[in-house]
Length: 455
Image (tube, helix red, strand yellow):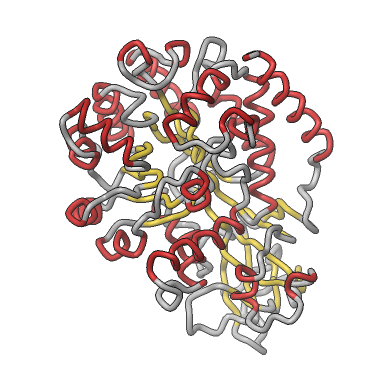
């Protein structure tokens, strides 16, 4: 294959996470936003190129993919009244605060969360936004604008809450909507923003929040709408024992039975957390192809438990990673999340049974499968040129021997360069054109104002 112009050779990386056993140490050739050639060590590309980037100081990973987040929660990190609590009391503390969210707050929070993710090597992020109090009707529209400004890919979910405190749910009544409001807006967002096919930048999914904040009716209606429009479904499930108890008491069934009863047991669905499944439920989820987003830091923060990741994968369920909301993680850092996944899963299965390659795979190829993408998550010819480049120049890496292992074991926290569709979105550890200090100042002011509204 020959190309006359415009191709970039990222040459001779220090290490690269590609298919194990394949020599691609000569680097990657990119043209028109896609990977067109992988070069063996000591070789020159056969593709004509007119640009080079010397990656001899860099490890190259597929862009990291975050499959579950709540961008708005960056405004309530380390909130005093919510510290040292399990999920249900934690939520009951924060729901009244979150009910005061305003459009400008969400836009700034979205920008900051995505910037933080990008700087940690993330190229595709899923956000679960389910708060639509009065004045927030166009919340997802504001998020689309922020995504387009930064150049990251996003799966934005039109979340929902329809079961308030008055009817036995957890959220305050001011945060819930009617089924008609939810379905009408979901349809509008799909038609306006959802991109299909290879290279999609913005996609829309439907995401009723959880069994304890929505009715079975909205779950069923969302499943039908998703099937009709060929979009994905997302919700929290089996995060805690309290949730299991809630489902048994309210619906008379366990969480997976509930999922099946509302038409969600399919490969269109991915679930956040997925911790408390029994052996039979693991098999049913795997047979249906339901994806699971493992959120290790959040699960440790709230003491929710440890997902059975290897057994889920063995059963056939795609497994990816997510940082979860910044109020239950207090960070939006994907490379650190990969490290946490490695260590938490070793705690369950043993240090010889979970490798750094497993953790990288969950954050890349696994996460892509969870989001229904087959064009990202792997460094291979024909895939989108979404890459994360890290260096080992910091003191923390001194004395290390295996570069790919060292990146996780020695605690990397920041990418040097990030590329989406062949375009650099992070350069020398900075996002070009983004005034980071002004963003932090604006975000801090919004966080303070949100807290003051409650007091």
